Length: 416
Ligand SMILES: *Cc1c(COP(=O)(O)O)cnc(C)c1O
Image 1 (cartoon, protein in one colour):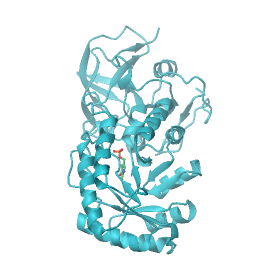
Image 2 (image 1 turned 120 degrees about the vertical axis):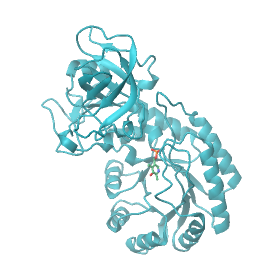
Image 3 (image 1 turned 30 degrees about the vertical axis):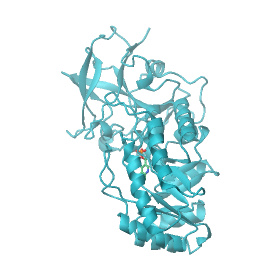
Image 4 (image 1 turned 180 degrees about the vertical axis):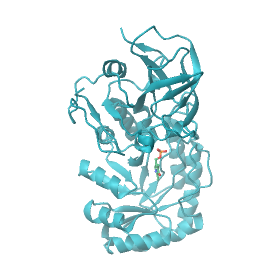
């Protein structure tokens, strides 16, 4: 098991005798062969570095500006390394912990502190120790806080005003929490202009936003605010929210979003020196991660599995995401070729630890089978908790294609 390492962010790291950090076999193993050989009794987190690198290259190639990776989405060092290899050099961090992690890994990275409400100690640490120069704000109080904690050294301070957007069409609407209303944003832009070396405006349309027009509309609103403020922007940041596919959702291609953003930007006629930024999270990493769970029991069309909404499957809970699944069976008869809908229960004693799906699996799925659950590279591994003692997991880097892009992903794996 030299290519595996035990990890958890919620309990002391458990290591196996065989695990050795940093040593990867070449070529990387496949998921099915790993499961059949290792028969994991805890969730197996599978990471596809080639998929990550490719997604980063594609985004960086298409976007007309700087691509900031939203670190919160998946801060796993192997993920950051693969994105760096794909050309990502800017990182959107929201806490001192994220800033430290990125700086430790990449001395050359440009780190931007994009949380509108920061701890004073976090601002100071980011500024003094980690070379962070750009900070987001959505209130005058936060502006004062940033100025105080960066000791008035305004020579290279960047201040980016977060604009509130009206409630949009994203699956995760984020309009309720952050952002200055347009009139306040105008006031903040002028204030920022008087004290900072660089001034920007940013917004976030919400996560898994399926409509390219959302960005065009947001840019229109941003244009009104910019015009009213009379401030010439150094930075315009159009946020994250780019969607990925799930079994019941096929979003428009990334090119359509880039085109809508291009149209919106052209209408603003920004000065040539204005940098355009974006902050994708999900779109860069979701297809690269999956989790292999074990079926501990079956009752009718419900499977009790060893991961759940307190683990890496919270999006399968109340948000009701349907993830692609495939069965991996190590021994016994070949699984049925008939696929039927199942729902899942997670391992904790909370009845809210339920995932209604439906998830399509072979009709004879049974205790002792494994299920690979795909499209979990974003907001999966990083949301795990230690609730009820289910905090162990194993991680492996693999060479597989994303599950959704594997022809006939409902296909069943079985030992020879
Ligand atoms: C979470 C977040 C992102 C990333 O969102 P995705 O939907 O994963 O692309 C980007 N910017 C901000 C400010 C965020 O809070």
